[in-house]
Amino acid sequence: MYRILFVCYGNICRSPMAEMIFKDMVIQQNKKFLFFCESKATSMEEYGNPIYPKAKETLERHGVVVERHVARMVKKEDYEQYDYILCMDQNNYDSLLRIFGGDPLHKIQFLLSFTDSKQKEIEDPWYTDRFEKVYQMIEKGCRGLLQTLVDAYQNEANQ
Image (cartoon, rainbow, N blue to C red; front, side):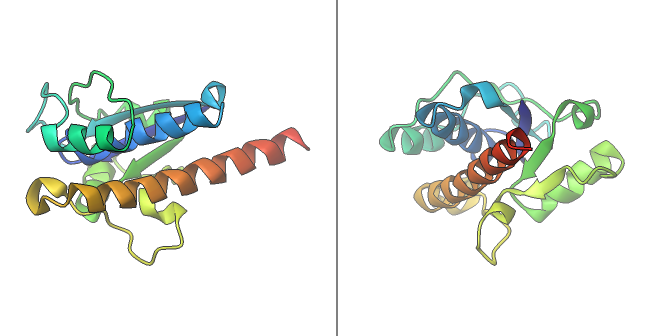
């Protein structure tokens, strides 16, 4: 089973969107047995808050099931708990390195690194209000991640 953690600054927009989009894709492809995923924040600023209403509306507009969500913060122990720790921007990446004290196993990656996009950062819609654009970027990253991991699983199974 692959354990995945999606991370953004406040855990009310991008990372819960990624978590719910990815879970939806996994269910659609009948691969739920293969994945466990969650989302967390690099800050305490939104701790305990639900998903941001515009993020929720965007997910629902695309038919993605929106689960109950409460913002939580990444802890040092999380490094050992997850196989992939996927961040949305450079600030998240830098914060994760600080929280974890490094990344010796190279678990921290940008979600968009699983796409052919030259862009590695997903903007924060809290500031830009471009939730649809962010949805499209996250969806593309999640699709690439899912394909990469399903392919890896199948390669391991065939060996």
